[in-house]
Every structure is written in C-alpha cells, then in structure tokens.
Amino acid sequence: MKRTCILSLVVLLIITFFGCGGLRYSQVTPEAKDYHPKRVGVFPVDVGTYEEARGVIDEIIASVLVDKGWFANVVSADTISNRIQTNEELRKVYLDYISKLKSVNFSDPELIKKIGEITGVDAFLVANIDYWNYTKVNDNEVAKVDIGIKMIDAASGKILWKAGHQEVESYMLFKPKLPGVAKDLVRRMIKEMPH
Image 1 (tube, rainbow, N blue to C red):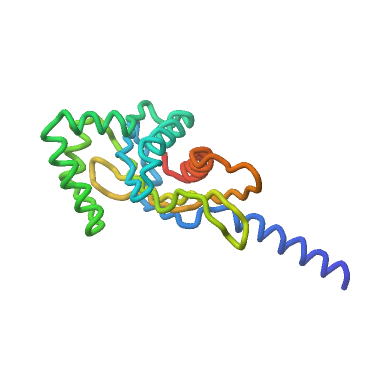
Image 2 (cartoon, rainbow, N blue to C red):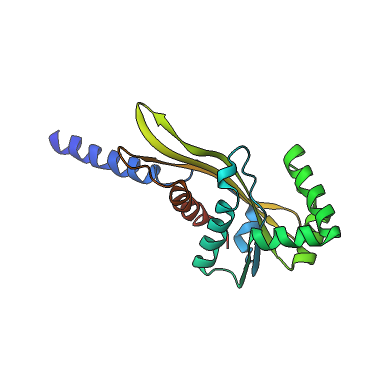
C-alpha cells in the first residue's frame, strides 16, 4: 500500500512537472509541419500603451531569431520600419494589411504577398505586448511581461503559428529589468515556432 502511494505520488509529480512546461497558448497549423522559410522578417511590434517597450522588444525578437541560426536571413523590425517610411507603396500595403489583421483578424494573402515581394521575406512575425510592467501578485512584487506572436507565410497569407505566454519574475529588493524578462520569454516562445 505504501509503495503504491509513493509510486502514485512520483507519477503525479512527473505529470505536473512536464505539464507546466508549455506555453499558455500555442497553435500550429498542419501546413507548418513542412514549412521551412529561409528569410524571416519581424514587423514592428504593437506595444499598445507600453511605450517603454517600443524598439526594445523589436531588437529582442530579432536577436533571439538570429541566435537560433534557423534562418539564412532575419530582417529586423527596424529595417522593415525604415523601408516602410521610405517606400510609399510598401507603406500603403503594410498599413492596409495591419489594419485588416488587427480589426477583423484577417491575414490578406494578396497584401502580405506584396509585402514579402518588396522586402524579400518568406515569413513574417507579428507580435504584440499585452503586459510590460511591475506589479503585485499575491502580495509579491513581480516583473511581468506578456506577449503574443504570430508567424505568417508571405506567399499564402496563412497564419502558421500563433502563441501567447507570460513571464513573471518575483523580486524583493532589486527589480529585474523588464527587457531581460522579455528576452527569457521570447526565447521560450521561439523554441515552439515552426522553422
């Protein structure tokens, strides 16, 4: 009886340990199984009301992608943003695409294909920040970052992967830097991305 209880407890602990390891939300389409883009671009991240994250999160996502070494080329959000500002056609197509994606969650295949052709990119990452701040959770001081990411095929407009997760780091005396918390979170999320 004692042996059965111990064995049951060990199995429960193993299930709990492995069950807590995934992302809060991650969805991969069947087409993503055989999808291997060579060039990936990062759209400028929608930071919402968290202005202090502007630019910082863009660099974090691009650097994590480069560190992975999965792609022949990673086009940063800064590079895409500069191209949008200097190319009138790209600016119009990008704004139309992002507007449709945000307002009705529709990835327009014609618009994203045009963006891919102009930028020379096979797939795009579209990310948004849902939370980027210090707060209290159960009377504990925490640094909290919450991000959503979508991977979109430039040729078809299909959203091949989307994920959402948050990283929460407790502290007592010294606040952890939010970019550091964000980098840990992005690394964890990108591990689950098709490549």
